Length: 160
Image (tube, rainbow, N blue to C red; front, side):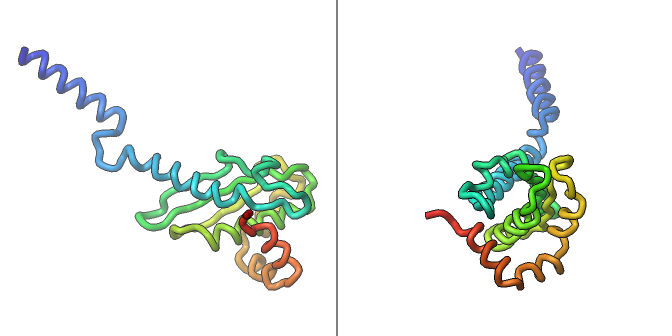
């Protein structure tokens, strides 16, 4: 009986070690990142498209899988969004990226660094747009323009 108990104990500890459950917090880490990614997605899915009456979720511009959260340190997270414009020549892709940035900067309840990209191969000028929407000075300048600011405010306004 002692031998069976020892074998069972060894098997259980080996299973826990292999699955990462034996380290405190190790199993929680992926779950916490998934929860934070869902929190981000819940914020961005309701953003309205600048030229259509639909949300970015309805147009499949953003999906749950387009959000990634990585821990930088205990209190800081890197949030990466990869969105897909509806057409490869979408003239409002930069504005959509700006809406994503503004909404998350205002609403995310945790400290974060934000990177927003167009999904690779989904836009004809993705490299240029990626630079624009991740450049703090360009974003600040865009938000100083009253016309652009009004469009962004309408897009990020929470639905009733």
